[in-house]
Amino acid sequence: MNKVFREVFDDDTIVVTDITTTDDIDDGDSFEHINLIVAV
Image (tube, rainbow, N blue to C red; front, top):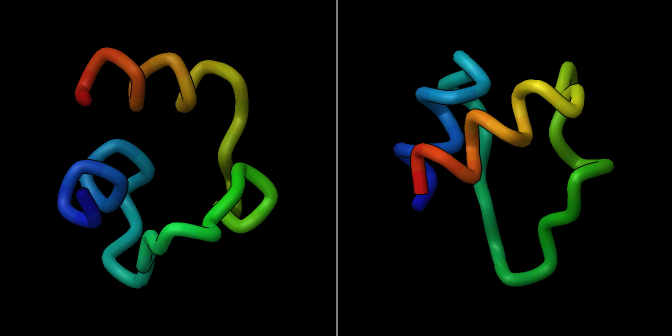
């Protein structure tokens, strides 16, 4: 799952856990969230 987030948000430092929320992702706007949904 981390790989998908890292690719969509172009950030190799993202670490997704069970408690990660949208507030934890820097530079995450609504367009990027749509891209994430499509990627998953």
